[in-house]
Each structure stands twice: as structure tokens, then as C-alpha cells.
Length: 146
Image (cartoon, rainbow, N blue to C red; front, side):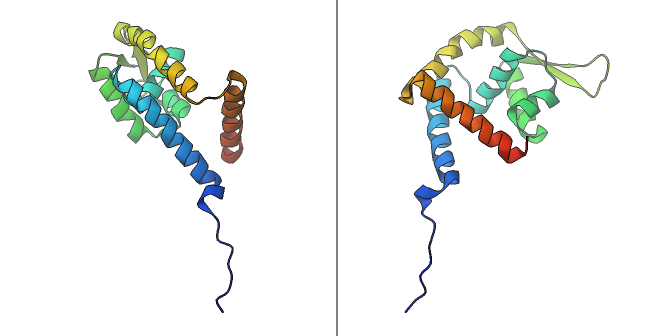
């Protein structure tokens, strides 16, 4: 007789629930963002820049939890699209700041409905949506040891 083992079920795994939910949400964003000409990572970068224009590339990387090697091509593409411009710091030439252009500011208004549509597609009440988002932020902070 073969030994019995308790195999973990896929649906019981937090990692899979987060992964599947993340893919579903980012997929919903991806479809709507295509209509405004952005990829999902570009949208996240623009969100951070709309919130804090002129931040350094390092600060943007921290905000998005991205390595420079991943972030640089995103910024370069946004610059090619005319949505941002990079500028070296006058104080420290090693530091580069990213600024939203007029075209980038105009895009903010066109992109605003995307978030609203995706949030509505979750079927969650405003309170449940806020609670889920807060729980996920707390989970991330706890795992990162903050």
C-alpha cells in the first residue's frame, strides 16, 4: 500500500489565488489601456508620475518596485511617445528626473475612466474594494518586513 501524502491543493494556495487574480485584473487593464495607447507597466509609471511629477528614476523604481533594468525601457518608451521627458539633476549629474509633458498630462484625463471601469468590473462594493486593497498593501509590507 502506497503511503498517503497530503498534497497541497492548487486552489488552497495563497500564491495561486494572488497570481490568478493579478492576471485577471492586469488583463482587464491591458485591454482598456490599449485604447489609450499604453501598456500596463507604462500606465503604472504614469500613475506614479501624475502623482509625483519630476521624481527621480530611483524614486520611481522604488514606487513601482522595479529594478532599473526593467524601468529604463518603460521610461524610454514613454519618452518616445512624448509623454515624459528625462532631465539630469543640476546638483548631481548621476541623478535623472522624469517629468510629465503636456501630452502626458492630457493623457491622464483620457486614462482616468480605465481605473473606474476595472474597479467596477470586480463587482466589489467601494468598502470591500478598499478593504481588499488595504489588506494587499499590508500583506506586501509584512512580507517585505516593513
